Length: 408
Image 1 (cartoon, rainbow, N blue to C red):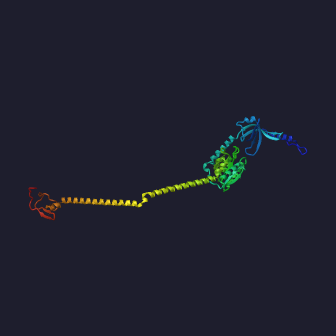
Image 2 (cartoon, rainbow, N blue to C red):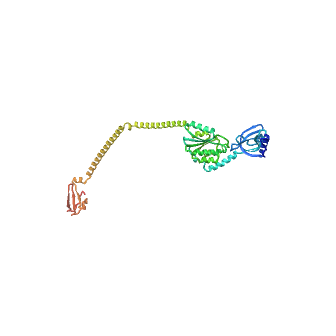
């Protein structure tokens, strides 16, 4: 019910505050989910701020120490809880606060379960597969950076990158990195940088925070946007122990924003040292190869065949002369032996030849058929015969029968 008031009859402060207290009391007790910040214990009372996990909205809460200590595990700064609250309006101070009647820690287990289910769905679609990961360019011309406004992550990336390679260029997109607008702004910045042909790699950087602070970087819409990028994306969210889903879909994960700068931009000093090292290594390799070839050439030149080629030719000529003389002696000796053998055979043939017997006064008696007559008893009167002498042949006929010869 509205209070009746006018400039002539204003309402006292106490009346207004009492009305406000009555309106607030109508809300009754309510269960509220939020994140604890600025927790302080003073005597028997605990003071804290309950912040909305998405919007930048918070409220003051008080509770008794017994209520706080009865919660297991005991809440700490950054914990996500569900509280049974009773709204209170303090008329004396004109301030509003909630009184916690019960505190139930929730969030971490439930959030982790939701993230795990989403991770399994995205992994089944192949968004985290290693073969989808793209290799970062060795020296990017322009690096896209998505970070919070005036954040330490931006300073870490820019300073470390320019310290490593002073000529590197950055296209920085500042946006909300936590809260209800974070997903939309980060996604829009990602699409803008991905559409820029000059940008060779994109870094999404944010400092550390609680699990709730990093929830936007596990959002399904943002994860799918990163998977659809044509430009390689580096995730540098939080610290080493933080692992949002963005780390799994990104082409490269950096443990911190500083680590992202080191992985994306090469160190000019290290590269110069590597160039000098490779050049020295190449010089030693070529020098060693030339030294081995020179040693081989010197060894070849020192061999007798190359040191004095004529000597080898002369030695071969002497061998040819010796072989030729040896062949001549062998052939001459063979001819002499053959001549002697021929003379011996000829003498033997002469000694055994019937002609030699004929020369001593003998004759060979043959029939006209050529048959040799060896015994006189084989002849009959009237048989024609041929008498062969050493110089001629004579034909005759047997007139008388053969007579026995006493010495036959």
